[in-house]
Length: 310
Length: 187
Ligand code: SF4
Ligand code: SF4
Image (cartoon, rainbow over all chains, first blue to last red):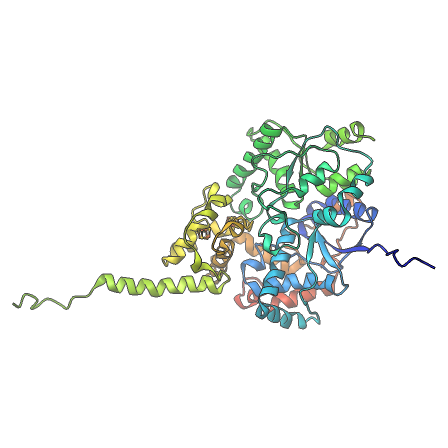
């Protein structure tokens, strides 16, 4: 007779919400997630038919019900299957969870949204939410399991963490919250679990200047990214910048090259999304999980694969 | 004494100005409240939101606290041409820190919504909306070299490869204010 105390471990399963930037701009981040999660025992559902979250400059700038309706269709794709979504893009994380928060807080919005959804034979009850991959790794998978899963460690490597705005604020709308949203620890601990040093630096929570700011005024946007990069260089001289946001990833990687070309900075710091870094440490092919960048990554990847081999 | 004889009745200009200003002010702030900034009137102009706002940091004119003040005193025309609300990164630092639960981010976005009504909308935003309607993605690229390079199928499992889902999304958009305003062609 099987002992009653033996409980089956709850199977983790999430709908992989990609968002536009990861789908088209940085599919190596998508590939990294497709590699690491099954290997860590997390099942992925493709969430077939998903769309843009919707991002801030589109429907959210027109009206709230429309914003919530587009978000609700995406969330409903998970709700129908009884699963939550998860994303590696902070903008998607922000837009989907803010929309959900509005619908839960305001029944009038929720009912208007469902009137619209009824036209396509769908409904949303507010159950499914969007989790952030970093939180799934931190809370559901756990640091111990991450430590056990890696083949290469980051001993001796210093990383500068960039959690990004929508990982933190407004904490009220998010399913997972830092103890102090102005002094975030989760990404630092996730990096430390890989063996890296992830020290505090003064501009750790500062904005990278991506998104609306960059499309409205690139010059002003570059002020922020330059200050951030200089702070990282001067204060902690990081080997690598690690972020949990695909927008921060693009901005820090891409704008850095522009600043170099304009002679405004004279150094180069490779940038990776955390899921890419984890995938490399787990032994997946760097060409597939981290093959797209503007600021070169080869050296730091080589350093990880050679220096950090266990 | 008849010193006022021949002098037209005195109109108290200050009073008229006050009254008109009050009506106008009501209109702008009411619209902003209606468009999502429910707690606008709770602002006490403490400046906490400005101290932390990336837009204020890099020199945009009408950042959160200042925009709120402008709305509260009834400015409107001056604000319609300004790009600041469209630069707001929606980071919500301001929402987190505001001691009065004003959610300045909502004010920035309500301002966007008001500007949209007046057709003061940046070209880039129109392009994003058009792309969202056409492809289901605001950021969309036809080139698929990157996906192929990293060993993924050319099409992500989104509206990009699911015609029914794309039609569903279009039906949703056609039933929102976006269609009422006629900002983009929606056949
Ligand atoms: S922090 Fe809040 S109360 Fe203070 S100025 Fe900003 S919106 Fe007003
Ligand atoms: S949400 Fe907008 S207004 Fe608020 S701090 Fe961020 S950029 Fe500034």
